[in-house]
Length: 254
Image (tube, rainbow, N blue to C red; front, side, top):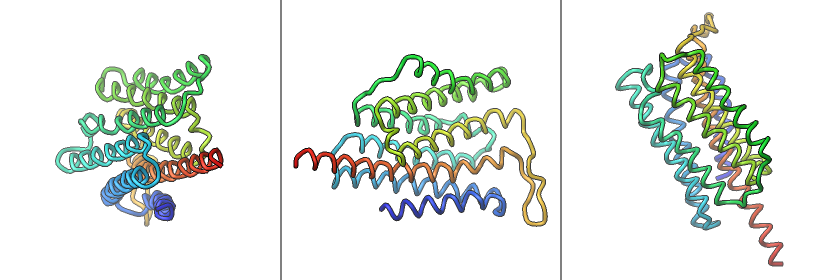
């Protein structure tokens, strides 16, 4: 399974660069299918780990997180086919994407004791993350109240996941923390794309004989491969965490 996950990471990096050469609609379609497949695969890895490696509840919560992402992404993509991409961000699928954060917040809270965090650090982290959506809301005004409200909720959950990851010591597990960080970054970029870049569309690539011109909004479709890579890293990190925990328990018994 670990080899397959590393292969997924390599594929996601290659796929990210193909955005310059593949027609955008084809790129988005392939990206969404890959995201769904990888999320289901990671869910299966968590269930396998729960059944054969460790019966810890946080693995089930992680499986639910990946399942919620796969289900929401499938609904999100087929909604774009049936209707219009410009109204996608306000669908019910967003709550499924947000559940990914909720499940991992619960998983990390259950999986390891709370090491605490200084109040100044907690407040600083909250201000740091919420300053971004607040700025976008100030710029966007009342033109997109639902989208901007969802953006604020998204950034709040991202901040809470990062805080829980730090407080419960999961930041010490490099691969897992890298995956969580990349997922949070991808989610922030997705939220910014669906709000700020719809208010102020920017054309960044004029194109040439090989590449077609597209806007910054279109280029931000690269968050798809970023999500794929992050989920594979998270799953690898979970396996590494279980391995270290098993070694620790073995030494304690010995």
